[in-house]
Length: 479
Image 1 (tube, rainbow, N blue to C red):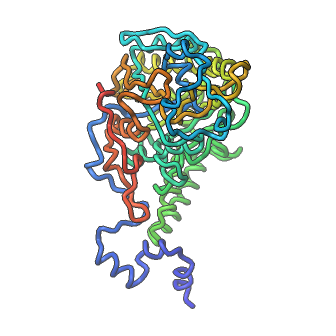
Image 2 (tube, rainbow, N blue to C red):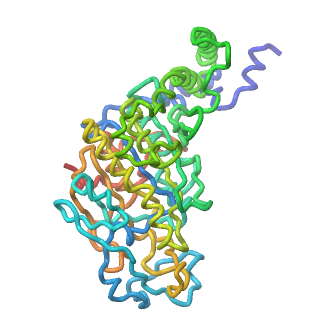
């Protein structure tokens, strides 16, 4: 058998069709010229809208903070502390395995004091003292809701638009729809940290920054918190920059031959990744070098900012990456899943995030970057007004609650000093202006200049999108 025939037999079916595959493929492509090779992405003009922001910094709080203890002040719960949650409030909502067999579901009022701040009188817990400085810059949405009731599914729905694995993440969609702002760093970067109250759990899964069925070059790049940002990025001893460039050029020429012969889009993605890695060898260490920051800036973010891998350090690094052209910067901070000891653990987590989050917003503003950067602070769901465990014990917690939780946004065309949506007296149900997670994601894409209904990719015979078959732009949040 000829070598060419053996090569064809060894091809995957889609590769065979993509390269022409003989007379059958020629006939198919002739009859249906609208068919495209898998992974060959064009950007139809209808995707694009006038942008309000160039980039996103998403401050994801993994584990679900309690909206009742941070943002959603409910004085009625103080009056009815330890009373049974009325059945009319709970309705037919399912409970998790943690609380479904509890003999009582007593109301647990927040032990933390609240006060109003900014022009809009935004309610903030005493755990968020630094947030008071940005009250006029943030838009607090109290009425976000979701269907998911466990962490993995909830985070997946928030980040990919689906509870099932395999869908592209938000950052991948943004890169797919807009492209890069720089060739020296990835368009989509992920940073993670563990909070002061984290004791395991809340796994951060790679699906939250995966490319799914989009081309591989749109996948997020997870940077390490210490040492080289990316493993094996540095050249071995004795290899000069000129040598590396020469070798890379030779490899890229071979890859181009493979791409031309087979049309394999994985080869094209690999070529782009090689080139990005080469550029990152110089750009990434410089971006991670905090020694160029002033004492005043380091003081703004707080003492933990000088410790690599902390949430504070990642907030400062997010600003540096934004300055250097990274399009989508995703921070994950673990430690918020407080089924027990919530009154002891939430203050620890709030201390981790309060100052650096406020510092990031203020730092972006003073550098003229806030108007073109959309900052999002959110999670997968909220927590229940009733306690998990015995209310009479000091170690009680709160269970998962998908019916309502709080997210805030700032910059990038968002109305600052504004509150939207309302929950009932128990922060249990949305009673005004509901915002589904698909609505939130549609609004984020809109701020970036992307129409969430037209930003699609063909997969399994269907035009897929981040917001699935739902989502609306919440225009009340926009300036």
